Structure formats: C-alpha cells, structure tokens
Amino acid sequence: MKTINCGELSFELRESNRRRTVEPDGQLILATPPKVPLDKLEKIINQRRFWIYSKLLKKETIKQPPIEPQTYLPGQGFYYLGRSYRLKLVDI
Image (cartoon, rainbow, N blue to C red; front, side, top):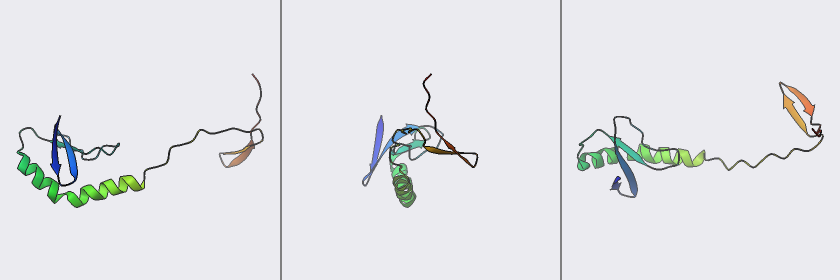
C-alpha cells in the first residue's frame, strides 16, 4: 500500500479512475489514474486542502453516538401511523 503525506494529512494511494477522498471511517484515500507523479498529487492536495478539511470537519460534526439497545416495558407508548398504541407483552 502506497501512502503520500502532505503536511499533517496522510493519504492512501489507490490507482483507480473512481474519485473518492474521504472514506466513511475517516481514512483518507486518494484514487488516482495510473502513473501520476507524486509532486503533481501533492500540488492537487494542497489546492484542495480547504475542501478536504471541511469534509473532515463535517464528518466529525455529524458523527452520531452509538445507538443503545431499546428496552421494552409493559404499557409503554408507541406511535404508529399517527396513533398512539400501548405495548402489551405476552408469553408465546
């Protein structure tokens, strides 16, 4: 796996025609056509630095906390299609 460091940013290089810069897990991927010189890639990264940081910041702000498992209690109210229903637990 090839990597390129540009300042504090570290990108994994992948030779591909698809363009994807920030993976869902926050890993930085730079998909490039085959045989692009590293100095040209560094220049592109520097030109797009603001965009990259804004995408990373946006990802951090929408990062949602882990969902806790739902507990169900008898008589608990649930809305379904605009109406409220009470939960009744039965043994099967």
